Length: 201
Image (cartoon, rainbow, N blue to C red; front, side):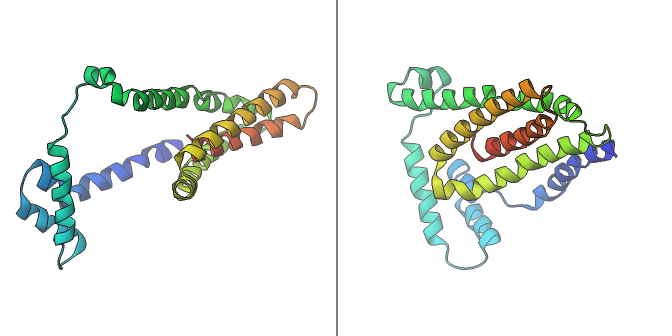
């Protein structure tokens, strides 16, 4: 069953491979990059149907004018540019904390935690699959919450809740030999961590 489940991810790639040639190019790409206004109008009509789309074309033209006056910077120029320094620091901080937040360790050791929690061997892969599904669903939930609360609140809240759950997980793993029911709290903590990871970072 697992080889089929793994191979099923290729279905979406195959679907994209077959259908993408029939999709029109982006109107903004056609107008800004290619400078082809007629192809842009054709793509807009294909995407949004017949009608007067002059307002959309005017917006793209304004975008083209704005990008024409903007200088393209190389990587070293971005690093040296004082006006971009804070944005660069924030981006580097977010990317670093995303890599060091503990999600990889959770996925790596979850199998062992489930095994210690006395799950049957044949059930453990399905519980692990449930963890991945949990992350997928929480990411979908995040897309609805981000407009309401903003990225900053979700980042701070996500990291705060993830830190709390990691502390709780550390405690439950330390006490699991003392109390038999601590194993189940460890499993719950893993699911909670993944949910908060999907909603936050």
